[in-house]
Image 1 (cartoon, rainbow over the protein chains, first blue to last red):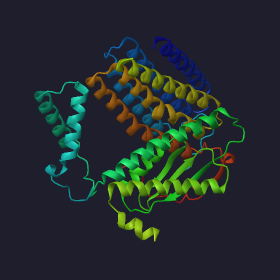
Image 2 (cartoon, chains in turn green, blue, cyan; image 1 turned 45 degrees about the vertical axis):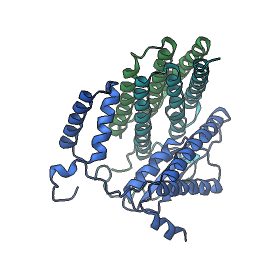
Image 3 (spheres, rainbow over the protein chains, first blue to last red; image 1 turned 180 degrees about the vertical axis):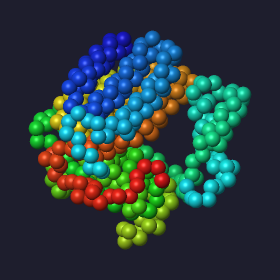
Length: 94
Length: 180
Length: 122
């Protein structure tokens, strides 16, 4: 069990690094938002791994908070980032 | 909302209250009577202070069709997860997508919402725009090569709609009318 | 070979596949060429990968109170992730950031200018 969990943790760490690379490169704000969303999901997975490793239930509320935080974060960025992007942004609904 | 405001007590809907109380109980992880009462009070407050227009859905749930809907949905999620994973790991140079317009056959906001939400949850498709007036949804489909793929995708969405309507049984007459 | 061992094995399998899906999604977000394709790769860990990890955690903890919270996390994720994805996709489409060479069929751009009906909350 422990070996499997450490393997999973390694994969999640690699995934987080790749997502950070996309967040740094991402040409527009929305690319970064998507990467952040996936990063939140990876964070939830990592916390779940920790809970499974030590069999404690104290981190479960954090999972709930992270779920809702990721949702609110990406919706608000998508809602308010229109027209303020850093590549040529021609707003189709003038 | 209609021009004439409806009285406050009309915004109280039993399913909503029960669901909110259940969420409260699960959040506290403590299934006692006192907790249920306080959760019910909180749910009552939420419904009174943030009223939602009542959904006009005359649901008649068909259990067998509902189970089939869920099983088929899980199957779709697994299969298309693998397909998207394959497309991700393969060559991505000439990857082609499509934006497909789908006209739903049932004139119901509820069916529109459920279908769009379930199709979005299946990897490889994404609702880009929706129009309530004509019940049209625009989906972005991943890894579609040609016109035939577009048609297959459209048929998949319509099949999903059929399953949803069969499970909840609201507008089944529309469906038969349209298919005959 | 009692049932706790079986549950642990199931939990390990679920977690391993969930983490693999998350890794594939991250690779997709990095590799795929345009934003909407990337979003398709991104919906995977949030749906199947996360559900698998949560199922694995449920099998590992074997505690009814914890399972309640896990079900809640899964449900919230299922309800919210399509909405978030739709918002991001729509914003990118309207900001004109779509790579039209990659679309073989585009039935939306033709009728976008004449769509004047108010959207959002009715």
